[in-house]
Length: 115
Length: 115
Image (cartoon, rainbow over all chains, first blue to last red; front, side):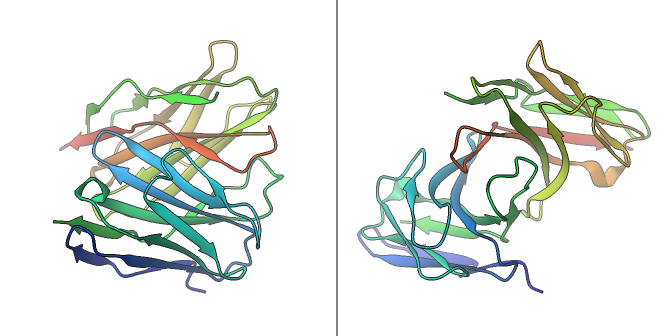
């Protein structure tokens, strides 16, 4: 039981390049999330998927796209990377969303540097 | 709109002492859940404790307790008998029952435990 896994762990991009961050969970969770973490800003929600087949924008969606490939996998794509997207990216999942006590489980994070 | 405020960017505590990390929140949801997470220097996010808005008693998990004051909209984390391993970033988060599946995070408090 690996929990939430993310690839890659580190990535360096040049401005304008594209890349996809991969996330997978093996806990049969319905909901999945992508956050970015910047110093002094806490975690900000980029996109989330309440259930397979649905995606919604979070607080900072500009410059990103997502795909909920199946129940297990939720990918985040940067089509044209910008230095402002330098950050640590976390994927998270949680079980059936109606229970308020359902905590999120986080992946180890992807550290992205855009030059 | 929902909001979490953590006003202490950094805190110091002597080993074996207790420390309180502040968290205030704002929501119009009649029911909601409050969470605390720990992020050590290694970067992973670790769930610590949960408090439901209708819970009659304050939540406790080992050395962690949540001082929940609903009227004041505060959900402070109390760590008793601090240990060196408690040095980390601590995030307060909230999830409302308004039909979305989003979690809102505060900006965090960095705790340093002194030997």
